[in-house]
Length: 375
Image 1 (cartoon, rainbow, N blue to C red):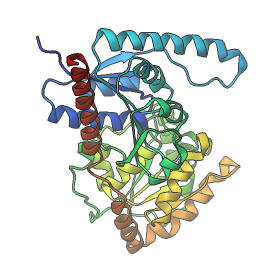
Image 2 (cartoon, rainbow, N blue to C red):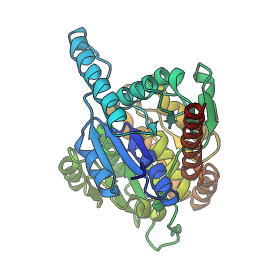
Image 3 (spheres, one colour):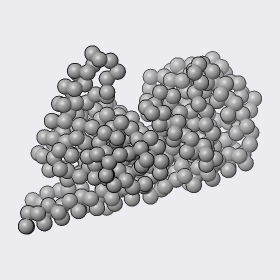
Image 4 (tube, one colour):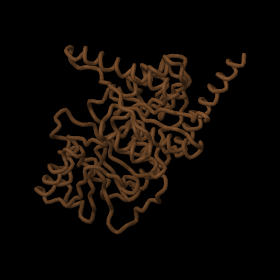
């Protein structure tokens, strides 16, 4: 029986890391017959649900993020070492041909194992400032695919770096924007896990702008934990809004939105660009190396987005967001200009380009192995 080519996508945890991998896997499976795909992650329910819905295999590996306290150092070391040995066994026993690292601490055990077992290692970096996992694995990687031109200057080593853009799932490219509806829409996104300060302050910001919001529809993705509290706050403030824990139909929601308020993760920005929807960006202030702020600055400089930095006093975020939204709600021409600028940021072929690079590397390594055996 002929061996099926087997590619592992390693990482996840959040949609920002996981969804680009799903986009690349989708393109590879369309082009390559009988391809076997496995996603390896931390075992979080969110990862497993999304991977299962896409129809791929899933492998949970022991792993932990860098500890904040000294007492967590030993569990960190023990668990990640266990994850590394489990990944190494999987690579050998399941005849894996290549590993694609998606970023985040969950990508490290399999990435380390790939380098040690001489499997091709490709890294996807979604942000302008590369994460610690990417920086640490870069010296061992064969290829790094970046979403921002600014990323390469922060990477050391001799690894090949290619600016591909951030892969976006095909369904984000399939809809046609419909922003001429009678009722304009504003969409609030807190990411797959919700964003507490956005959830607490956006209803208050809308309350301050209630006269300008007449005729607007509000949809607020809150995350599971905050859904009831957010809906209660809207009700208390007498603001009509649809609050949902998670948007399974996010592509359609983005295409229908006239304005989005959200964090500034690299994958969220790529999806906004694919939809050409203007945004008010509120970067997560405690993101490592301020990478969300750096992402937002790139988009704000082009005129695609308005940037609101979260104030030191988080209960004043409502004032800052209300000030940024005030003119945008009233000025349709301004929103259309931002929409056009956002669309220019899109790299719609990123998933296909990354898939091609991954497959080329797989084929190149397979050819080299055969040549070595023949010699």
